Image (cartoon, rainbow, N blue to C red; front, side, top):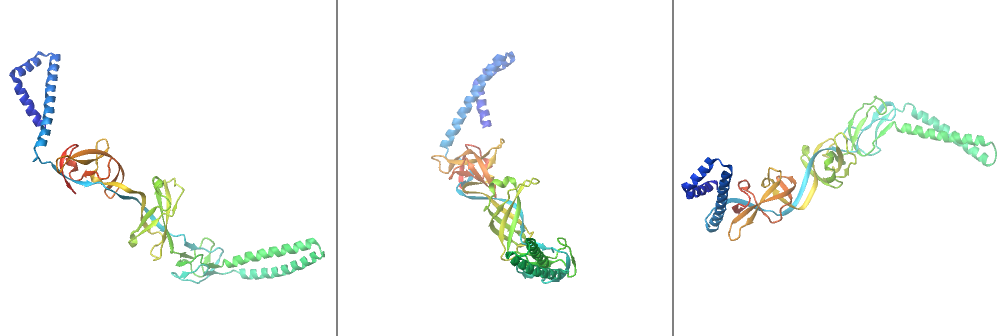
Length: 389
């Protein structure tokens, strides 16, 4: 275009003759600013008129020259499709039924009745501590209770017959009730010498040996685990809170065993950790095969967005200008010219992106034909030949 303009300018100057050149030279030589500016304005008007004529001539050539070859680009049609967006987090496999059993009373570990890997039922005896004379104390209290009960019954009958004093009746009743509670407490202490399974599970590890001195709450005896019902927990940045709720779909990938499971979020925490600005989620997991283990690391793909009629465009077909605005090129068919289209630079508003696809929220309509290959070689309002990709 610039070369053509120079040619036309040269022709124009040639047509003006040497007298015009001398006139221009004389005006410059005269040094009159007003005269020089006036001459410049005349030349600019002439050049603008030539540019208009040149554009009209080029358009006329495009109309008449049917053999003209345009840049060849490929195209793609925008059609609505379902779009599901995921965000990735790391989680940990846990179970609520994973405890270490400690004694509640001091004493020596007398007997261990189970072995590692053994399945046990809730309430099954797993270990026994020495009673340290507790059973003898219980028997003595039971004898005292029997006597106190007999005395209380007799005093009750006498009091009903108005025989004896009220204080004798009340003393007998108090003694009986006091011993009754003492016997119950001693039975509870004796029961604590037997360590029983708190739930159905597997004895994972025995930590103490018979004869060991047990300190309540300090000396571990064994670990019992139930792997039937597991859960996955993860901490999610608070920025995702508006898009994550109970029953949100999630894909749980467990790399160590090569398994991927579909699940839903079962619990969303209401507390934001001030240290890392995150909240806790839990996902209940069934473990029929028993291959999920506590503290396994998993990858979570949480579905935080779904649009059933999204307009998706390949990310490479979306360009950005210097102002940070995004645009695509729409192809508009030129009437009367088969296979010839005109490009239209169209600004768009973008949504979420994944897998090299980006959601377009506004600026496009279903059925629009977009430039795909060759997008960086074209300009707005350019005529091109199109092939469907």
